[in-house]
Image (cartoon, rainbow, N blue to C red):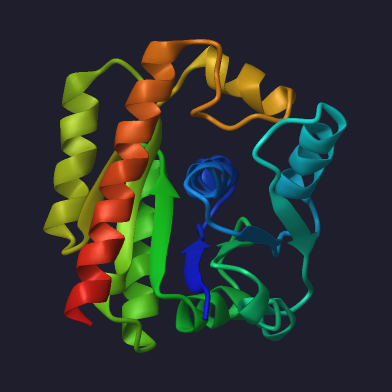
Length: 214
């Protein structure tokens, strides 16, 4: 049975697909058979990214497929070690279905209140619908150089009662990597890749802890 991770958000532009690609590459590098279930049929960001990745013959190869329903995606369970659900850029009934199917949920968000408020609202909504709070982690993405803004966002998340997973900085090199079919830990800069790998390791460590205590 595959480990299932859901990457969901209440709004677009907060790094959802960035995290999906990043997790897929990291696990694939470590010998896992990984598939991204692209549930965002309107944009298909991850699907297009993978098309470019295949054209450029980049290793490791990542399996990506668009699905209309969570039920259809779950049918892939027996064929992979990890299923990553890249959700729609807003909360829907499908978002809750993803959360119910997954072992862990990552909610990416920006550092501004405009991003944080809907993210916490979504986390509360999941909890009200029976999703264990421990299965929800919130990650900051597209973070700038302001330490006060970063610390304020971290406090906002923790005061709301959710686990802070870490942060991914806004870097031009990450956007350039995406344009060529690579992930945020496959940039041209070693320091960016190392920082990104540390961020992903923090997410993996949290998931393993939650899984152990389940």
